[in-house]
Each structure stands twice: as structure tokens, then as C-alpha cells.
Image (cartoon, rainbow over all chains, first blue to last red; front, side):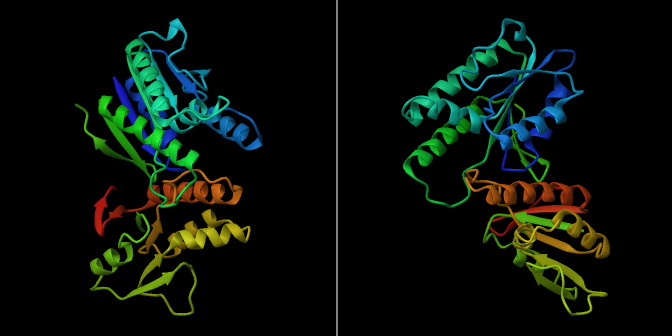
Amino acid sequence: MLILIMGGSGSGKSAYAEEYICSVSGGRKKYYLATMQVFDEETRAKAEKHRRARSGKGFFTIEQPVSVCKTPEEMKGNAALLECMSNLTANEMFSGKAPKSYEAVAEKIVGDIESLNRELEVLVVVTNNVFEDGISYDDDTVSYIKALGSVNRRLAAMADQVIEVVAGIPVTVKEKG
Amino acid sequence: MKLVIGGFSQGKLEYVLNRNQDKDCVVLDGKLRCDEDLRGKTVIVSRLHGWIRERLADGGCPEKEIMEFAEKYPECILICDEIGNGIVPADAFERAYRERTGRILIMLAESAKEVVRVICGIGQKIK
């Protein structure tokens, strides 16, 4: 089962995704696949805030900034929360010497998530809505937005359910099939 | 308290005013204070995000102030732009502004009687 949860900055998408996976995972183990790379005080504080929010909910945290299909054998048949596509897309696109094309990045991410999803019973993917600020960006950023847009569209097509979180309130975008 | 959110120029204020034609409405544009006596009036705050931005720039605590306002005027209608659906800005203040505005909206949505999202002038009641 693949569930896609999207939202903007400070929308409450993470909290909702955690709540969601806890409600559907049953007795399965829950893994948290963290894609954010910690490199300064702000990212450290953010990671710490997320860790605190998850504590006591029984998640096993795995740091996976790129190649999310390369996960341990023990995850098989269990539940995972993958957070989030905006970081993963940035990591996949900009971690080499030169930025990769948005087509290649989207292909890689969607392929990785397809194989990850085959291994798991429940996969909840958190993604961002970065598409509505009306600002004209430089070429690299436009390419990044296109990659994330492509990832979102393809994951939404694959997903059993798509939910947008608005001011902490879940709004169904794609009904559970 | 009712909360109305949505993107820029989506007709949020018009939506609210159309639905409250029978009431004596006062619109506070991007502010929480006015000299008028607000008793018995339907208090509408528009451009709440503008007010939040100002309070953050002044080092204020918009979270506390807006909750106090909502308690003082339990029938008020708060209108705020959705500003979180974009690329995370490189500037720290801009990032904090988006994040805190988002968190304030979650807090307000929790205690609101009704939450409406306005898109193309059309209101979707999401709570």
C-alpha cells in the first residue's frame, strides 16, 4: 500500500503522516526513512524536533539521504514513512559535481520508491507543495521544481491514496481505491 | 472564530463579506487594533499574514497575541493567505515567516468552529 501525503511549509504534514502510519501499521515494525542531511544548526534543530515528535511512537530511524531502495533486509513486509521528497530530490540532483537532469532525477527516485514499495506492506511518502509561489527562479531551481513535480505526479498515479494537509487538516486529493 | 485561508487574490475577503451581508461587519486590514468600538460587530481580520510578518519583524509573539484576540472576539473571522506552498527561501527570516505562519494556521484551525479554503473565489469547507 502506497500513501502520498503532501503539504506546504508548516502545514502539519509530518505530524499527520506519523499519525496516519501509526493507525494503519497494525503490529508491523515502523521505520522512519530520513532524507534530510544535517549540516548546520537549523537542520540539526529541525531533525531534533522531528525526532522528539516521533519519540515514543516506536519508529526505527534510518538515515537515507539518497538511493532510498538501498534499505536493510529487516524492513521487508513492514511499514515505513519516507520523509521527504523535497530533500530527496535536492540530494539526488545536487550531490554530484554537476546537477543531474530533472528527467534522470525523477526516474531514479520513482524507480527507487517502486522497489521500496514492493518490499513493504505499508509505505507512506511525505512530499511538498513548492509549486504555488509565483516566483521566477534560476534554471537549476526550475529544474529542481520540475523534478519534484514529476516525482509527485508519478507517485500520485501509483498511490492508493493521496492526501493534502492544509493547516493541519487532511484533505483527500485521491480517494482510497 | 472562523478561519478562511487560500492563495493570494483568490477572493477570500469577498467570499466572507458576501456571506455576512446581514451583519454589521468591520474589516481590520492587516491589523488587530482599531479605534472603533467593536462591540456587537462582526470583526473580520484580513491579510492576517501581513500582520504576522510585521509582528515577527518587530520581535513580537504573534502566536500569543492572535489567540488572545480570538478569545476576546469569539465570533471573529480571520483571513490569511496560504504562503507555505513554495520553494523554501534561502533567507532565514523568510523561512521563519513561512514556518511560523503555517504553525499559527494549524493552531487557529484547531480551535476554529469552521475552516474554509478559498480557491478561485469558491470556498471549500475543510472543517
